[in-house]
Image 1 (cartoon, rainbow, N blue to C red):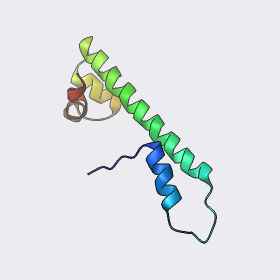
Image 2 (image 1 turned 180 degrees about the vertical axis):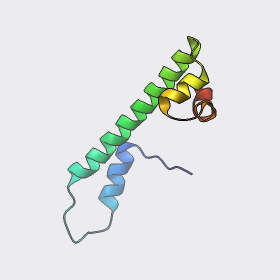
Image 3 (image 1 turned 135 degrees about the vertical axis):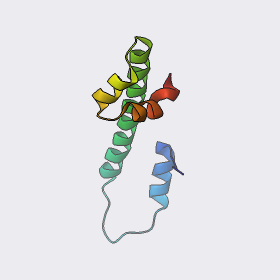
Image 4 (image 1 turned 90 degrees about the vertical axis):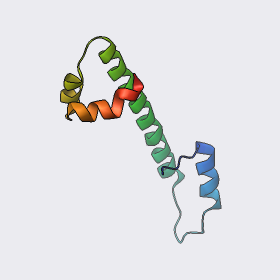
Length: 82
């Protein structure tokens, strides 16, 4: 099961973490959080793009071809978005 935390929860977990022998740069953690947010945005954009393409007549085979997967894999991953 995947666990997700808000930025505030991650900051609190960081503050409560064990004392480490070296200093952790909070910029590193911020970069991870920003990448996570960018990935979520990209996932949403992909679902919307696939849904729009399907509404405009693009086949699952064509979606799979552009994504480099089978039509079945494309359907399995994105059919719920339509």
